[in-house]
Length: 427
Figure 1 (cartoon, rainbow, N blue to C red):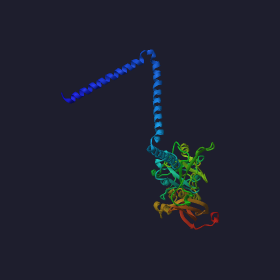
Figure 2: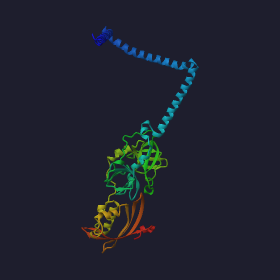
Figure 3: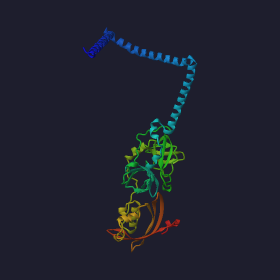
Figure 4: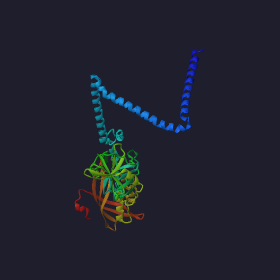
């Protein structure tokens, strides 16, 4: 017979014998456990007590042996003694190293959870802040969706058409604005989309004691050119008042005017708050959790609106410059008379004002009622090579009635260089 077959038969016999023996033992054990049946509960209780106690005793015995080994090891010879000294020194060194590492992690990351996303520093967070500029205030903001910029309400208060300035020097106007004055939050929608600048609001909040945080914004607004400023600090505490609809984060960051509305990041790049107010060494940020809840209730109540009426010569001049201020170029172009349009087209006319951020009208007065001539004084803010230039103008516009409204016919506007203080008030 084939030796392989003999070996397989032998293995099969051994397995059968072992299985028979095992089944016999199991049968005997069950018989001993259940017979007599009335003693089964008592046996079960004894087993539940006996085996855990036996295991605990075995573990304790092993620990005592291990302890005795470590205690007696140095005294088994000079060689063991010197080895013990080296082992103890290494153990102490490792213990203090772990303490130092733990302290470093807490000091620089706030928690081990932030460690892996903290590599590379925080300089990359600066690109996510944008300037928010209006005629009455300036601040910062950031994208929470591809075409929505979040900022503080006080940054855009009384401003119907704030401008969003990007780091590449381009800017755009608000298409619509909603917000909540009491929460000091506003959401600006623009026509163009910037998905590369979107950051996520942390919800729910998770901050650790003394966690490092980074505030980004533009201190002092457009008076300081260049990229966004990054300020570092630490989380101190949550603050909530019954008189406020939002909660605040307190940090030791020194916020500067102009940074309002910018984002407050953790080291992982999640937005945990919105720059709001600050004093020396104590700044406050609306928590991202509060922002998330508040957005659902945003409306356009309290938002400044553009209202014009070109049914009079003065109204037409005001409407014309108001449309320039709001960058509503199509509406402004439609206020040009037929005679004026013979000398220009939309592209050429729009290029004249491509760098105008804002227009502020100081005075208008109907100077010649018979010829519909209006005297006007105004100023513009122009965004030129990353800085604001302010220009002042005065002169007259002759208007003409067309299609039921007055339109711009002929201008005699001249720039005023360094006007004196009384220029703003005299006609």
